[in-house]
Image (cartoon, rainbow, N blue to C red; front, side, top):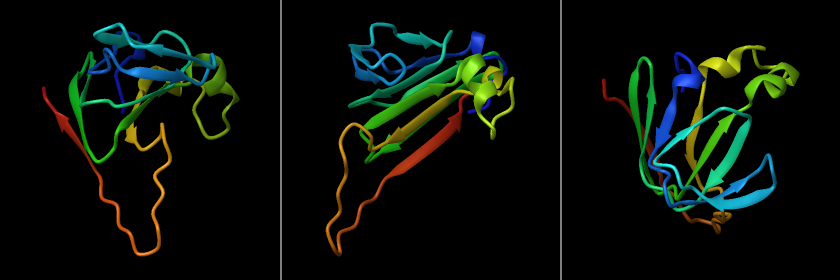
Length: 124
């Protein structure tokens, strides 16, 4: 999601959710009602609900169906500069709030179907 400035951006709807922090290789429970990103973050939150991303330009609601988890990601300064397909200062204007099936594998057998949905809504 494009944001005006990551330093003025928060993500709500993750409070009380368990997460695996892929940067620090640790697990935790989110305590904050609004997550503010101030470092390289790459977390997988499990059993999440809907989210609202708030930034200086407004609010965006991320709704999901059939997707139990949410990835929260921003590479911050050093990692974004090391990525060949990412602008050196791209970290300042983005946050990834991506619903998915991440905590556990979703395996489909032959002939099985799986449906899911993500809806982004600009609230203001």
